[in-house]
Amino acid sequence: MQQNLLSLDDVKAHFEHWRATRTKLRERIPQYLWDEVKTLIGRYSLTEITSVLRINTSQIKDNLKINTKINFAEARIDTLNSLQHPPITFLDIEQTCSIELHRTNGVILKISSLPMISIQQIISQFME
Image (cartoon, rainbow, N blue to C red; front, side, top):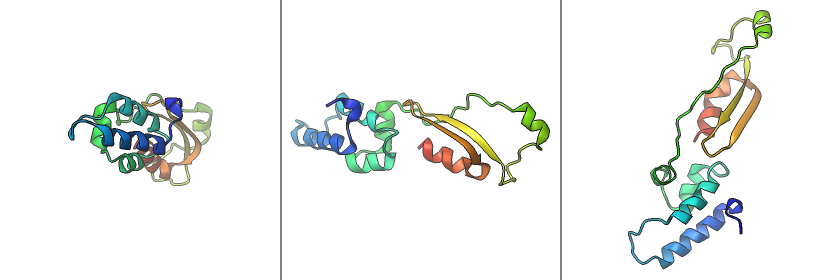
């Protein structure tokens, strides 16, 4: 089976097999299992992954070198529309925007006409 097609249950079975057959109780999780975990990032929440695999987020971040900070790459103002509409303020809950977020694992989220009031929650959940 190709590694990028593994489900969370597949990886769970591999972790359980490793735990049952390892030679030392405090043995480090092998790299091949971390490679499998990496394929789950973006398809499952970190909460699901840590719970099912019985690992913690610190282990994931340390072993996968996940960068959880948010980088803003580009901002463009549509000058035609900005002349017709007043500037956007965060207090105006009817204003919308378009965003594009990129995670380090390659997953991209693009949203058009997103209500400004939702931006913080969307970014927080996507970058989890």
